[in-house]
Image 1 (cartoon, rainbow, N blue to C red):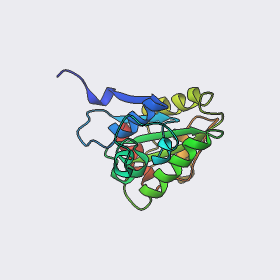
Image 2: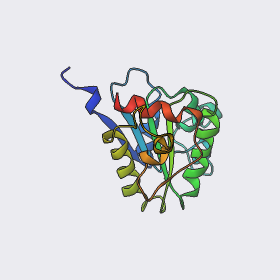
Image 3: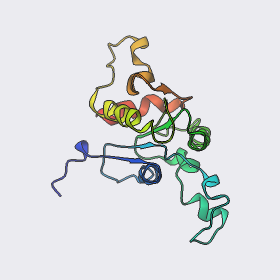
Length: 171
């Protein structure tokens, strides 16, 4: 009570990014958007690691958001570093899973590795939240996804729903 969801966002890095992505799967989360830096993983995250949970394919799938990207209910800004190969693999899974759906996913590649890309990813998420998307009067060239990303970042291959979150985030 008393919290304006239009002024609350969730952002996480690495494991926190996994949690932010998983929160975006909930329809009644009560936030304007979620975002992650380096938290785009799939089930391969658990390969070769000792597990404290029952290690089954279903259990692994339930612990990451990328394989469920087509079920995103909240706008999610997924940013990974160009040199963060493992997170890029998970982001590719998210893009392939969300392809053809109306999932509100924005995928961005930023300069740097898992750690050095964090500031750029945070800046891109902040800009997405604070800069209004181009209106109907804007030129189509001005309405490119790159506007949601920091200048140093480049949009990754994106889902057809990319324009969906832009309107949803600022509404």
